[in-house]
Image (cartoon, rainbow, N blue to C red; front, top):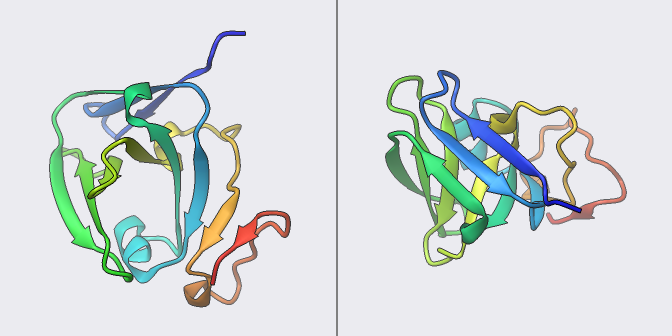
Length: 133
């Protein structure tokens, strides 16, 4: 059976990431930095092996330090501002892609939810996934 190919894109389509295969992990993050980055109450991202990801277009990078001190290098479109992919500094073998960049309602759901102590009170995560407070 062939491995699925999925396309992630910014809002204007100038910056893309094409992935081959299933994600290694899909997670929800409730940290305050992800809330600010997404403009939503949490971020949802899929992690892929670096060799499974091909990017195209021009991006600008922004590196931020997260709540626990780790750094992420986010690549976003300089035209529309949408983040298309990111890498955890020091974990260069993996690429994270915001699930919304795939614009695919059939994309696999999360297997883990992190920083739940910062989760908004009205948000409910699936009971069967791993929960990290």
